[in-house]
Image (cartoon, rainbow, N blue to C red; front, side):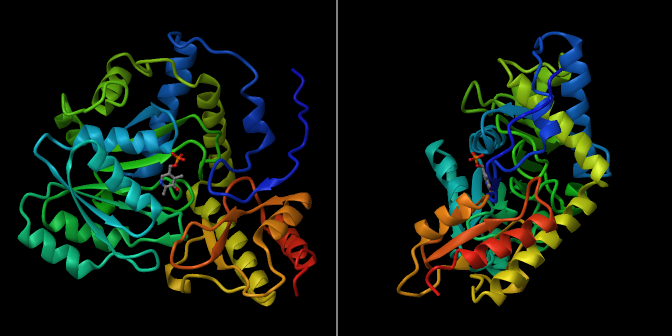
Length: 370
Ligand SMILES: *Cc1c(COP(=O)(O)O)cnc(C)c1O
C-alpha cells in the first residue's frame, strides 16, 4: 500500500478537528463491511472495551458509539436518559454549557439553568441549596473543559454534591476525555460524552457515551428521537456485538481504533496529559513573554485550549495575525467569549512541545503591529 500522503499545510491548533498522525489517516485506506465480524468484533467491540477501560477501573460501566459530531451524542444522551417527567439542571459557563440547555429546551424537557457567566466556575453553594429545595430535579449536566474559554470545571466537587442528593450526573467531557485523567466511577458520573476528533486524536464522524450500566438499562423508551435513541443504539451493540443500527462511519471508526493504539503507545492518558501540559506551558510562557495576557486566572485554565486577549494596539487586526500564522504553518482559533475580545490557541492533537516552540517564533515574527 502506498502510504505517502501530502504533508499537512498547517497544524490545527483548534479543539477538534485537530492535527492527527499520518498513521491514523493511513488506516482509512480500506473498506469495511458493517455486518462482518472483521469490523463488528475486531474493531467496534475492541473500541467499546478500550473506551470503558480509559473511563474507569471499576466494573459496571459500558459504552455506546453514535454517528454524527459530538453534539449529536450530547443530544442523544439528554434526549434519551431524561424520563418523561424528569427535570434537568444545567450548570453553564460558556457556549457548550448553553448548548446543553438549548438541546434540552428544544426537546421539551423541563430545564433549569444556572449560568455562572463565561469567566466564573459554577457556584457550589447555589447548586447545593437548589438541589436541597427542588426535589423535581432528576439530572444535572455540566461541561468538563468549557472549550469556549478553556476553563476546567470542578467535576469532582460538583459530583460530590450531585451524588449526595442522589441525582443522575451527566458530563460533557468532549474536549478533555483522553487528555485529562479521570475515573467516572470515582467522580460519580453516570453518563459521560465525548467524540472521536478530540483528545483521542481520531478524525471526525462519531461520538461516544460512557454509561453506568444499571442507569442506561433503565432508559428504554425514553428517547425522543429514533436515530438518536441512545438505549436502542446501545442495546443493538450489546445484543448483536458491535453492530450499529444504521450505517456507521467505518473509515473513521477504524482510524479511531488506530488512534487508541497510539494513545496506548504514548503511555496512556497520564502521558498524553503531560505532553499537552508541556505544550500549554510553553505556549503560556512564550505568549506572556511576547506581551499577551490570558483571559482566565491560572487555576481555572486547562492544558486543552487557552484564551488570550486580543492586543489593544491600533495596528492589531486578528485576521491579519491569523493569516500570517497560517502561512507559517499554524491555524489558531477565533474567540467565542462575549464578555471580552479574545482569540484561542489549542494545545491538543498530534502536536508536540517542539511544534509549540516553533509557533512562538512564528508569533514573534507575525507581530507586525508592535
Ligand atoms: C467540541 C465540543 C462539543 C461538540 O462539538 P461538535 O462540533 O458537535 O463536535 C461539545 N462540547 C464541548 C465542550 C466541545 O469542546
